[in-house]
Length: 427
Length: 186
Image 1 (cartoon, rainbow over the protein chains, first blue to last red):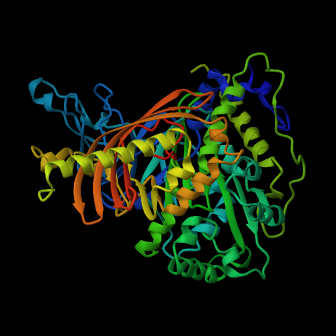
Image 2: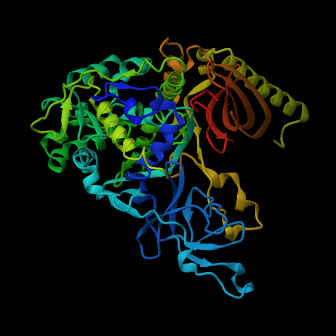
């Protein structure tokens, strides 16, 4: 197997093996998850010294914590003595992580501070080199914390590049930014990690078909009429509607699409309209008319603007994914409004969501299709809208209508290059 | 229920159990519209999130140290419950079930519910507070078979004929969610 055979030159054909082959997955671990910036959590989850949450970088368990110096640390959750996880809770606040096996104990920032057996031997070990393994690079942008195993990776700002323009269209609408509500919902699906990612990176085309039982035709018409698919940089993606200047405010304002908001009463509707009224001043004329759909940040972070949820697709082998999702709400919204907005996420997405049922079923079935024998000569077709992406005077990146699958071609070109860079390594 | 005679208590227990058996039969027979009629129009239908918090060392030796309640993020929490739905959300789910493009259930999944441990916790006028346990066997064509287990904490409103569910809180027991959806009628 050669990586060059999995994706053709313009990425209009993707091999089924790209989804189902264990050897490909091993290359993804090294070439992508060992090198990219990976999303770990949001600063609002760990506001105080000693606060921690669990995270993953691919299959590697990570503790994300705020240390005694108020800095943020990410360490691998595995004791230096026998390798057990030293943190067994999802989240919380503590002074020390204590390994259950022999009680070696660590600061939340990873330094080893106590070895109970030390006093029973003549020469104790050098604790300063036996801390938890640190993730070498940790950076934040707008409260979003990322980590990378590649010490030499470019800055997070540069990695996100023009994707920031689109993320800010949402983040900057709120004077105090956003916050994550509670622990992530997490569930395991027998699917390849790339399909949940692709689904949010730019695949709004499945909406009118897969979700026709729930999404009304007028919502789809709005996407046909005003929808854009943008690739700010290969592997990143943003889809949204750019609403005309003269439409009523509640037709542009974020949040009005969900039942949660409609049922939430006058108070939440007035809140959302007020956010929209101030948006031109906060994010500029063009971005105030943006009514977001789905965003993706390479390799596995997604943002569903319409239902304000962040999601991470954590691989668990080629055929399994642990999907995490959080409700994200404006940090300065009143408590009752935050609660209405979180329902707007959980009723439709997440493990109990009405819409997400159909997605998870499709992702499971796609994996079965990828693993079919005797169909290797039938690559998956990714050629819709080839070459139709163009620069735009107001929108950074390459821009096209929502049926163009350029978002996925650009992802797979970056994916192919990342795997080719490591395929001849003999690790 | 100190003011009730033993025969009254037995009759009440019987009526409540019959209500739950009928509810389970309607759901297993996919008569979701009939099931919806068992829900009050002001129903609160809640599934708290359930995590793995730090053990509270200050409480060691006490039952509160490892209480189930500490694991739950319900409607009043600052976290995010898995579900917090109204009658309209449930109606939307019922409506979806009878459309050909509800692909997660087309072909339909087979289900079998066993409801037990029905315990009437409190009677307050026309309202009963009842807990029950359930096991749900769920078999989706083309996928593995799954077991769901949990507890339901209900408020039942007494009606002329029977009862209506005015609040349901579902405490799921899986530690890791390895089922295709938590969006079922539970």
